[in-house]
Length: 443
Image (tube, rainbow, N blue to C red):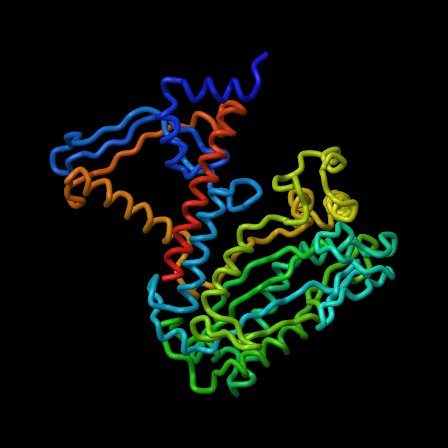
């Protein structure tokens, strides 16, 4: 019986290995590439004659944003997210003027409320680990008990899952109330607020150890036409922070428990608001622009984080028992599954989102006027690569028609040997990108 080493050696000696390797490198070592077969042609726009032809099979990246699923595509997503966020922070790129740095900007963290006491790790100013509510000190940062309930039998799993499922709606209600709070402080009627200012934001969801999301958001106050319009004279970071505090405290989404009891869903008591500093000159209270963009982009690539092996929807209730997760997260998933079978929660699709512990929203969202879009960033990248190809062929873009005809043939690699080789290629390319980034940012 052949070992993995034997299969690796055989694949390396295969006649098509060089071609296969080029395909893998073209998708940066994607963990599960899309396999396509067909042809790509460049034709003369006036005559229709084919001036360049490529036929055969190619790989396309899977495009999954989760680092646990595909590190290569996750890196690309994080890079796109970084540029999208940084454009709205610093301007001077993606159609956002540099003057946007003069607009009021704050970094906000909104958390989930408590549904029961959990194991925590607190460190004093002197660096001493403080005792947890269980009576013990959790010295290890990766202690598996952190985030799990002190008493699982009294922990309100039902409310926790329903809060998680409504987190997106809670954010929407928060932004609506924030506009009202801003209008009130500016002495405006709510309906007149859009004529004087515009609220722009980008936000990312991050899972806490206890399995509940909290939102990190960059909130900016523009003039009525968006980033190209100067913010009104009454607008300031202090006023924006005050309005956010009031809006967060007054935002409520109401639902019911399975027994019909009314349940009010709100933000947690922990609210953090920090002004955004120019460039990276951070103070004790503020946070620098570049650090903030990288921070948000990093968390946009995460899945549930604390839940291993649950980056895809569950097919049946039996799958829950086979997940390699803590009992706390297993109970959250099972609660999602149980509530998802009730008619009153049908619109929440809780079984579909059980693997995400009930969270149904996108991990990275933004308002329309914040900056550019992922779609535009990807379109610009495709246009750049096409321009490079046409330049190599000495062809005029104005006189060329691009014709693509590809058919799906499968996804992933054919065997474990190819997966191992692709993983090695991906790790090497990732190391090269990281080294290049360090060199460019230390000059």
